[in-house]
Length: 343
Image (cartoon, rainbow, N blue to C red; front, side, top):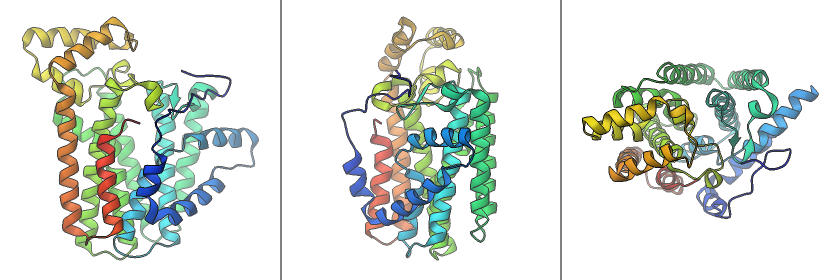
């Protein structure tokens, strides 16, 4: 999946940059300020650290979380320097979790670029993630009331990751336990992004609570869609290593629904396969057999329905809290995007 010494992969011809640019039009100035701010953060006077940060800057993706913060802010007022700082911290927290997650999952590619641990080693990845977390916490102290919220959120994200690691190989993981894990590891950062945006723009306590709820629902839908992509996506199209959940014996919603929908014999067959899933290669016969089982039970349709239900609920919460505006429309489109996305 890599090419050349830099580990980059050919860009997918299906472009969505124009669509995202249109969606982000009302916050383009905010995103531009964020990019300038992060450019300074991804620098170091120490040559090796600078090299790692330069490599990591190529991971930059859709920046959905800071976009949520800016759009939520624009729903209630103007944005300012505190919004940019908090947007940067949110993005730094997310980036640090990516570095550590890729190591935990032994992923080779992230956003069509070789992962940090794969290129520079495990110790470098751990320490780089720690550096980024630390910088984010310093920035958070510059915004009144933000540091505690961001620190608590980071702690919960790490607890969510530990819950997932602790349940690796637990083939009896329930839906309830699955949703508890993804709430902590993914959804709460979306929720906090929306909460901070609204809070810093003077929204009422009720509106702030509603925006956090919107973000939590959005983040949960995002993670469900991401878990489905890990099972069925095309690594060249998605731009990152796939099949890592199976390889690490992490049960996600597609596998849980498949397991619970099979008869006793089918369930026993599936559990036997999952018990040795770390040996699967994408495209191998066991992997193709698993795909056939998913198709026969129409599991991915069920997963998509769950994500769409969450998206609809999120949009209802949004409509109840925010008057119609360009920013609200963009948040609604963003909610729909995370379910429909292929990349």
